[in-house]
Image (cartoon, rainbow, N blue to C red; front, side, top):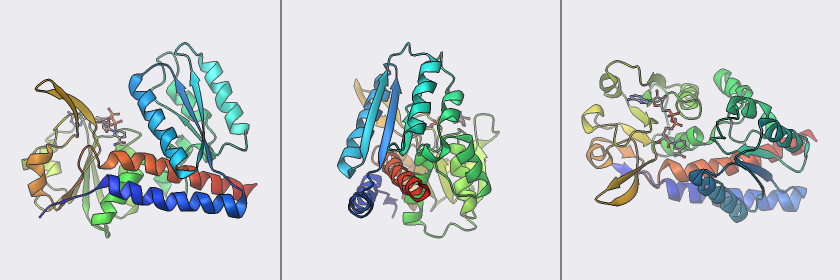
Length: 288
Ligand code: NAD
């Protein structure tokens, strides 16, 4: 029987634990974790993401400060805002919602964030720390994916993990996390020859491609654990719905466990953002 990994329930449990941790920080250290969320422009999806993140902060007792900036905001003004947030000791986490408008260099923006406040874990210093196994902020989606994976497969050592996708925010950090867990890791991507053959060797298959139903049933080894990171909106019979990168209904019977979309990795991403914000607040408090 294949288990459906309930990411929403796992994220709710994690959030409950984090809520208690925030309450303890407030009462014992008078410390309220605080995240500044910066949104530039009018991208509708980004507005929804920011709204959800702010709502989740409120539920957990984390303070959030929203900075909404016009689409026409200059890079200089955005960098000036980041510099002031870096300096503000009341702010423990800084998140700039991506994508930023085209005239702004997102690499420069991410590089400007103080790495200790980089709760998204996208700063090169944090990526470097992950690569060499030093402590640092770990990107939220791979971190949440790993937590879900370990909930069904606690011992990962020696497992063959195949990751489909090599983005800086999902594929690469996921590969590094799984290496830390002593997996044998293969990354496949848009230029890989015979992706299916690689996927068929996976004990753990992580899909982070951004193509609906990309992973087919005959690409999956019987008993594999499948983590579907993809979030794709499709229209079928005139109705719009979210699907993952995995052909869920066909693939599920082949697996020992699989994450659904929605309700899998998605809820874990926000929960891990809260986790990182609290960790940042604690680390900065200890340094002060
Ligand atoms: P991306 O576009 O940056 O990267 C996609 C990767 O897939 C690339 O590395 C590319 O090489 C690979 N790829 C593209 N076409 C391919 C093909 N035909 N064959 C093999 N590989 C191919 O995307 P991303 O930011 O990594 O996101 C991937 C998916 O995960 C998207 O659906 C995105 O919406 C979703 N996502 C979900 C969450 C979440 O919270 N659950 C967070 C981030 C991203």
